[in-house]
Length: 286
Image: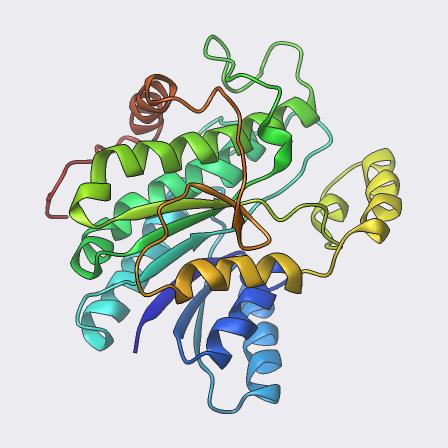
């Protein structure tokens, strides 16, 4: 049985993806923000599918110490129960903010959760992914187009704009996927972005100000059900042979920003390693 780790797995797109993949017989390890959310999600899954193979872990992935702790717990689980193999990692956890807020490390929160958490978690689980020649999938956004990485102020401390921060974090996700493919596709690791489109979820209603909360409450009404993008995550996991594209929407390849180059991916990789205090190496042992 193939095992998949999914972050942000207690609501919205993540929870719907868990539902689909457990029905298809995958063993799912979900990560949620709190123990309470994880218990609720697990009961929800099992209430409609008693045979679902699902285990939840909780942690605030915005904080790097929590990423390391959860990664250790998942690694121990995989080594004990799954021959140390991880078939796929879906980095789906994300947030929206109305104002400048930072993590314990002093990093802007959207950058930290939407991007850096996945970069770091992937690194920590990479030996297990390598063993399975696995797949890494990030939740992207059409909003990554029309923006560049603010290399001289990546945390946007000067003149913070929350929408710019969100867009940049999603551009970084696709640059990370590009960087992974450049480095590891030849050895069997493949990375992808799923563009969910406008989805009816509560992402814009969590820890946001009155204006953002109101606007998102109106806008999300026009969004599709989380089931729609969940099908694309499932599609990328179902394929026996790893798909060769990078950016997917509605189970089909889509065009992406011209900013997604190997040069920018390499630059971001180096910066991210520095920010996380880690280093990716081919065939390294943790």
